[in-house]
Image (tube, rainbow, N blue to C red; front, side, top):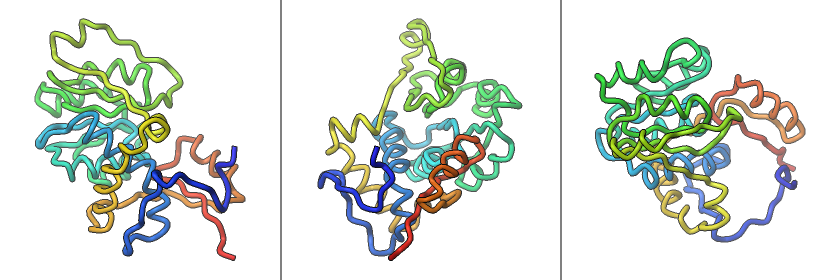
Length: 238
């Protein structure tokens, strides 16, 4: 309720100054996906230089942003997965080294192959269900699987024996929970992300824009699973 409005009231702790050289479309597309991606990689997964990162839903808003941020933070290799071959180009354009269409290929086997049997050090998973479970098949020793969404609508299940002896971790993160319970934790992410945008090191991938009156069509577009990057709703200047 109240999400689609021309004007909103925001808590000061959740407002951030836009750098002078960052346009409003970029600023609008930025916070949710870029703050989420930065927190996932830098704070939750504690990405270390040279590590391999696997990003599911790599052509989406968080995915295309996380690909870029992983590279900025020093990842040695970034692998993306997508649900359609039509989305491969989007993930490659964002900077992924390899992109796997999990509808055509067993992504876990392919990741193991691409990493010479080692697996990915960090896996970002917003899908859950079987994708989460299968991700353990390609998670390296001491690897971190970070779960931050449930777009498949299914629950993933893990066994303790899959974790302790391999020193691997399954971690969770919610931007919504953090925004509500510990909003101060987002300021470090904002400082880094806004600097990267101002420096031109990070580019927001805007897949499509709709007028505010077209919100229904925007939802249909996202729900069709054909969308890539970030979808924006815009208002006319009066």
